[in-house]
Amino acid sequence: MHGPTHAPPPARPRTANSPASAARWLWTALALGTATLTVILLVEAGWRPLLRVDGDVAGLLHAHALANPAWTGTNRVLTDWVWDPVTMRILVGVAAVWVWLRGERLLAVWCVATAALGVGVQQGLKALLDRERPQWQQPVDSAHFAAMPSGHAMTAAVACVLVLWLVQRSGAGQALRATVLALVCISVAGVCLTRIVLGVHWLTDTVVGAMLGIALASASAGLWISLENRKAAEPARTPADD
Image (spheres, helix red, strand yellow):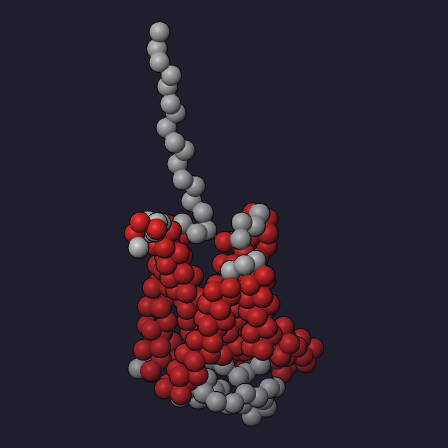
């Protein structure tokens, strides 16, 4: 008669807070950070094919904006109210409050700090690169300070990716995660489009802003998960250890 057999322990599920998840976030940050630096260096070097694309896209969308006032007005509403940097910072604030109320107060502060760091990086790069914005005889909108990176695009990317990460790590269902992911993609791509349509940014300004924002938020998520896993792996202290 055979003795009792024991089934092997189930494999640990891959969750949004696992080491594998941290690695994905960090690799995403590295890849996009490298791509961002490449685009910036090409623009600064005056690489003609890229600058030609900038000019062609800006000219085409500006002509369309002049010919379609209703379309231009819609883009102005989207850029000034829906995807405005203030709106995006409020979104991060609401998400931070939600996390705080769930009992993760340090994480709430971490998210706010990430958004604040994004503003600092954005303003620092603008001052460093000092790229001129497009100039038009018939402008449909106006903006100030340097062009690269787009503040609207970077702020939206940071905020949306942070919210996506928080929803994923909360254990939300697949339908909700997919919905949030779709909204993130629409928002980041949409804000980039509005800034070019309104003639206040070149295509590469928005691409750099979006990629840099996603990279920053991804690095923040990956670092947090890594620190969280390292803390969980530490042996618990007992009174005898003191």
